[in-house]
Length: 275
Image 1 (cartoon, rainbow, N blue to C red):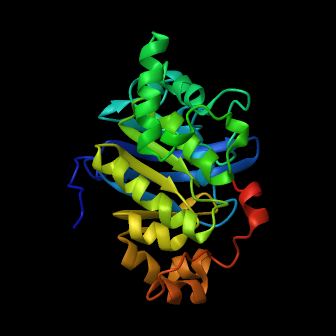
Image 2 (image 1 turned 30 degrees about the horizontal axis):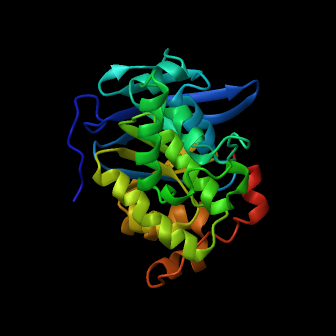
């Protein structure tokens, strides 16, 4: 059942609306007239091949880059001109593909960096950081230096740092990338629990079994343009999506395989090159 209802602009009622956004870097059009809507309380997926413009769109939504044209509307407020720190203050947080913790700080101190957005007192920020660490499975590692964490631990730390800012909308950029199948299975309930605590999620991900399991709605971006939108079952069967991204083998496996499925063109090298 869709969480979205009609809206006078033609886009659904939503916490986030991206309206006809284009982002150019010189002569390169990275995002081309893209629109999407994220319903409150949903997990919405954004998928597509390498270089499709997914992370660029995240960067525009979160305010790290301005849109060339188009609008970003959050909670019925036009935030297109707001810088990233102001968007964070009103409840938009994001994670990054390449996790770069403060290596010499402890886990709890890293998370507290996010908590300082709303808590000026160090004691309050650290108290919130401890609660968030428990939520993402880092409660037993509070005093470890961030550099000692595994890849899976650093992914959880990145997630925790974003959660500590107190978001209503969380943009997850490949939070499962680089994890093995058991680590992916362990992370999925963590993401679901974040939604259950009232945080709306927009997720970019290439582990398709996870996307199909987690998401209420999925948008597909290819060559900067939205080519499809709908519930997971429809997206897995959409011929344009199969042709542009999934490939026939991955699409078929999604219908009956429980282990993580990644499109054939996505390799470990691809994770570092993704746009």
